[in-house]
Image (cartoon, rainbow, N blue to C red):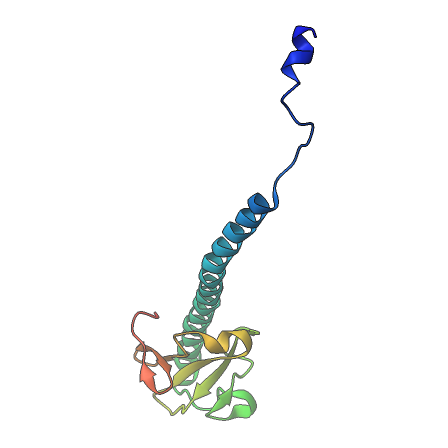
Length: 150
């Protein structure tokens, strides 16, 4: 036997991973996915919420522009109503798959704009977002005010 043949005497020609090693890797990947996925979902919901908040602020600006022209908030909802879906002059064509926007209880001098979550956003911890004529911003879920959503 020469020196090269002696080096290979005790070694096996098998290569690869054992079943145990593969199971450990799969378990680690599963644990990481179980931790990361809920965080990702919360991040996506927060992103949709921020978009809705920006839309509400834009709509409030549109309401003020209309008030400056007409001296009233009446008739700005769709169909010249005082409550309901947005009229064409408010929101600049705001639409969302995650929130429905409405004007609630508009009077000559007051209004409340509402963004109600829908679809996958319905499970968001902040629930319904509102802003009124005074600029008061609230978030309510199941009738309770939720802090730190704005």
